[in-house]
Length: 344
Image (cartoon, rainbow, N blue to C red; front, side):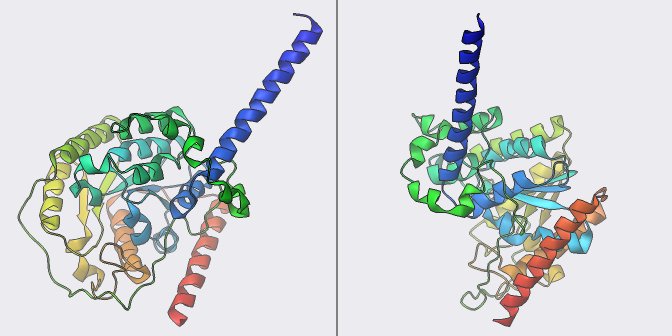
């Protein structure tokens, strides 16, 4: 190959590299924006190997557990990789994604969606996309898409989501979205989502504790057992948690069923619905909408979970000055927002 041909080849390679970079960045920017996208982008922006506790699950993870608050109270870092109605089958793949960027000492897994029939969740394109659309392009993302889109004949709009979002041109007019061109931008709230409704929802505080067991759907039990096997094979420390919500029919009994499976495999299971008295949790005032805690309930959940973690797990809490300042700033911002809410 002569010198001219080498120069032409180099130009082509550079052009293709720039094209691919721009294509990937613009595709990501055009994905639907919102809390979940901000949360995942915030995760990718965290300093590598700085997160002690990775929290996985549905939206309730981000509304029930305030990472900046737990940092201030208990001195460990944590981050929610959560999405609305996150399918239990997605959890293993979200963990894989998290472990590629962080080396958490503990994985917290919220159990709520294990009561839903996976056949229904498998058809829910919107919530499947909330998980896979917010992952960086990688073989891990492809594996997640392959596992979560069995019900879809055409998977290309998942692999190349520009096919889905090509008309979402309005997002390009949002400067905040352009900051995510490399899939990451700091989230000072550390993924926490603040809910402030305290006046319109009233639920009588009742003791829903039950000794009974009701089986979860067979397909979800299969997913749970597969997840437990994966955690043991990878030697991953995990804590399974049930966050507070208004009780559904057989909900607590199904969580008891899950608890038996989890504990039989040697993992801890913490059902906060049975700890409301110890937490000082009042279902009349600390629930946003029956399914999520408001910020006052979240601080009670965070306090309980934070103490439980430091009391039951050995978390090495040594950080660089940069990490300490970043997390102290996040706590200060949270308290500023919290105090403004209280004054309204």
